[in-house]
Length: 125
Length: 324
Image (cartoon, rainbow over all chains, first blue to last red; front, side, top):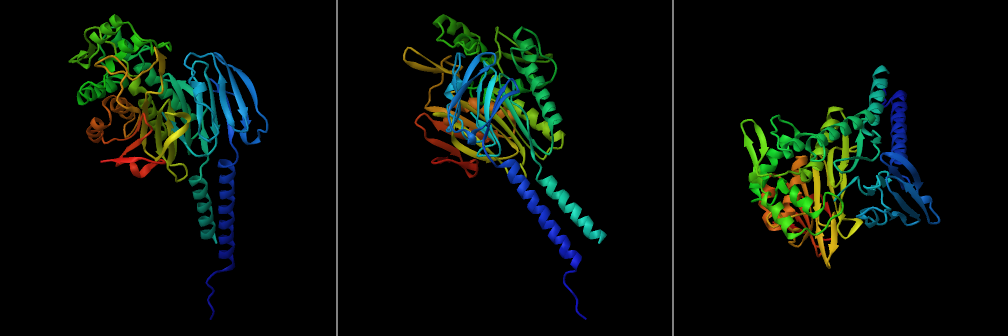
């Protein structure tokens, strides 16, 4: 008598498991990978969301937080262009273009961060 | 067939749980710094509870608020155990272990330099002398009825608060059953668990390019804090002055270091040790780090990077030297 190693139902289950696994992997890569998005916030409220990979030409905009700061967006990234704050640390951060980077103007209460699963999960310093 | 279906469902569930999507919070503000949080396997309620815990800590440990530190600075006695009390006890021990290089009674010096006001300046000699006269850990008195300050001393727990805040957040993530989480409070970071099986990648901010990284650390279940002279500084009379003050001279520390990053299993200590090591310099820091089971990454003013041997396996950096 011939004994089959696999029944038809077993093959079906194996196929289903493989399909679920593949779907999960695609879901993860879609939800975590993808482009770089810059999120501009004022005291925790989102002011603007920018698809950095979709920027073809540079532009600036003003965020009226506790102080008025000017933010510049370009194909190279995003940065605080100017702020009337005393220490100018926000401007010193320079260009942000890597996922995980954060620049903050504390006196204005305005932050810019590049979201998504990227090079870093956090920054110390 | 029933058994097969059961296996199928459990496999699918395992996949779903192990690949939990991250929940990111918005940037919030506490401890005079920005707070960012991301958790895996938990949601908004967890992040809200974590932020509430940070805010409650700030109330107790910030000299600008109305808790334990404010009570001490106004001449009162801090009798009850709490966050401020615990950090002061740790600080007193570190003050002894560093021969006074780490000192929480520096608030009058910080004020003399204007680093608390955002308008820093070189203080007048008389102002500096008055501030120095009441600076010193010996002015923190531990009595039977609690802690009090002598000699008009004033304390500032800024060099511990952000690290302690990270630990508050991580403790909340654990209580909510999260599988992983990362919190940053200013320059301090807390990491716990994993992000879908991977450890966390922490960039050490480059002192020479604020948007760049001097190194990247891949870690979990620990706390990371950095003290850098590039953080708060000003230029006057052709010289640079920064906020990391030597409690013995009242002047900014100059020993060739530009930044010190400390990794430690205790949040407040990671923060405290980064300040202490910056003030003590690289060589004297090594036995201190060993005593507190901590490790560190030093960046010198000339850009050279040095890493303690325990941390070396977790460091990515173009070029660095491993310390003995």
